[in-house]
Image: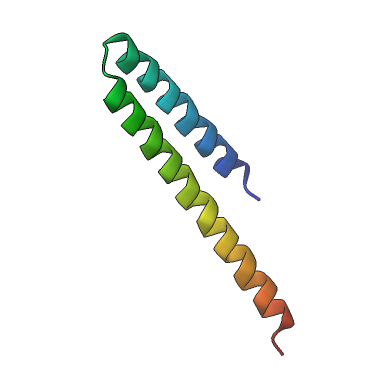
Length: 64
């Protein structure tokens, strides 16, 4: 596994956290929730891509 992926996920988390705090202080809770939801979706898409690669690797190991 690449260490870059961990840094990307951490960067997205920090960015979403900062944006959420700024938006909550400006009384925009609905947009803050959408921002955190968008960050979650981005990270989940990255993880799903890795899981798909894992399944393809496992499948190629068992195919003769």
